[in-house]
Image: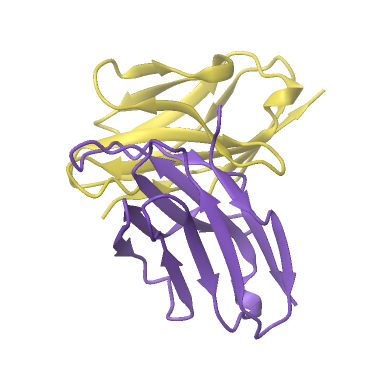
Length: 117
Length: 114
């Protein structure tokens, strides 16, 4: 049983550096979501893809953030010129939406924890 | 737009006691409702969900929740908790007919004492 996998699990970087996270969703899922979770908070939506199309982006996703899902399978989330405020857990989730309709039930990976020094 | 309020940030309870974690939501349309559990250093996993039908839903590990449309609530309960239930619990809502992007509450930390 292959769930959602994320890599790396932990990343420590210096302010100003670029970082990239990868997410491999459940293979038959057509939707992929990125959320951010900070200490004491619930997950906050960043963006989501249906197949390879990025359909929605949150205002939290500043122009330093970019996400891709080039072949509708795995996805990458890149943060350029990291700031200390970017320190958080970045969660990836996937789901199956048939004919564009879903429920919002998500299957999460274990997250990628980013620490910006 | 939908929103979720989890009224308690922390709920301490003794082992074998009952527990209720509270969740209220706001939406102008029909919703789907979820509870997720996050154990330390792990991702979120689905505890239970309400999509339609019976307002009383059962989930994993003996948890159950009741959807109350008039009170816009979706509280989750367990009659007798175990030490292993210590975790962070998140309520989430997504709107039907929309983009199905769930909005999460801030979480409730359930702390079970021996």
